[in-house]
Image (cartoon, rainbow, N blue to C red; front, top):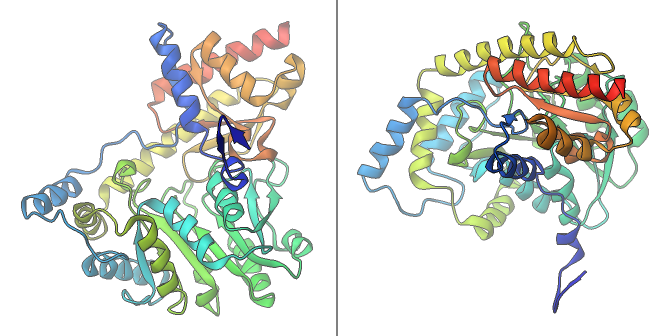
Length: 401
């Protein structure tokens, strides 16, 4: 692609960035015009980072911990991550040779794809899904193979469907549970089946578990690590953004085989040298400090989820699956869109300008997201009721027209 006198490589032109930030900008522009906008588009906790975590960073600054650290993170943080993983998964990861701290979980995804994929490899990933999966895989030269998530399949991946998608070129399966944007979680049976399938075909599983603690209705989280006989082929991606309301701190981590680790660290070194020094001290406090702030957030999210379900149930013409994790509802509005002859993106922009509510259009999360909107309930119950109430008004006016 030629832009004025510059030629932009197709690998950059074809990348899909996070459109949530574009919608947020549109909503902010509407606010500058005097429109009262309810923000249900952005996937960010509306809670503050817990005080003990902030204080750990402040103390590190006072100690002048403002210099480079080792590329994969400081020893103390990697040890804390190893302890946490042992407690949660009953799996031993060596802090030296299995764990790397990253600048957000997104960097972990990108670095893993660049480290493991070659030109022509195939990657099966959820679509709708977090756009970094397909973008990073494409950038690495791989061919992306979308697994279509829908209301009808409960936004869930099944081993029997995956088995039909695997070819001799398949190298990796990406899982995300709890799922963004669908709010679904994988069952024990589903995860076990996918792990067995991946092991039979000697595939890597990249498991993004950034929303792991955000579960509702007493349900449990199941990870490939719980079932893998060979954890060297399971790559765990996680981070601090969602669990501890630390989105701006930009800290994540990844676990890999000791054979892969040196090459992953090389990629991270080229990308960012190292994570932020004092933020790593905050992450230690997050893992080893009181977890009650996390539990409080999850309890509040569950209350909000219940309100979302209650309010959406009042609107005719919508289809959705009750979210069981994360803080999103993914809603099928295809009936409304066909009535007005609009795409999901056009409809979302109309809702901002005409009704003062911002959601995320489904295609922001992949091509199979057309016909859907994502509702983030990382906002107050009052705003959730107000925002979905405005959606109800829009739908009623469309259906009457």
